Length: 331
Image (tube, rainbow, N blue to C red):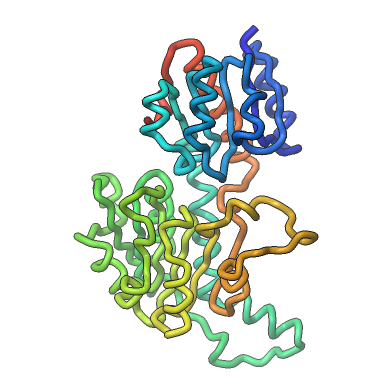
């Protein structure tokens, strides 16, 4: 019987893994935590690995996996920036991801985040809890169907997000290196990110993390924003220079931001930090900033996504074991 080691499985995912195991006749062993040099020895004797990493997998770890004869790592997320793809390739290890598990989940969360900012819901909630029920300019809102939305990245998630915004009546502008012809029915492509953000009232990011877009949204870029505009990042934290964003908010270069991800979140998300606290001054400044709405990387977190992420990730492991490759390969 084929054997797969499944790391970092949450309680809610256990029943899903059991059903997959029975359906496919594969033995699954659940291992707590994320893969590291300290626990890589637990991988010996397995045919494949299913991981849910949000910390880096070192080349040293991959060398050990190669010694154990393991030919693949299946990451259970769309993002795969935790892996050195070139090192994996040299060591004959296939890295796969789950490219599409529920783009609708992230798109709908993005809409919710935009409305939360536009309708000043946090400020209204704060006033309400203080018994201040006045109608006043500080909580008066704009209307989404009179706004322009800028979508950066028009892959599966970006396109669905753009379509939902257009359904609200918003004008949608977009930038992507690779333009999608079908998407042109409900959005207009611009030649650069700067061309998008200078017109947009809401800018939403839907791009993978790459070496080229590290801190792409920095203080200099925020100078191109409308002072009344909002930024939404439900993509990867490293795309936004957090220090630059907070300075831009303090300098009134933009009105606010909804962040579902933070560039150094790996130590804290998804974990309960109530007892040990947070030893990251920039993170604390971010989550306590009065112009930032922060959520802990949960845009994807729906019933459909949880089920699909686990099943598709395990399918990719089995596909490599049985065929030598997978359609979800990223290296």
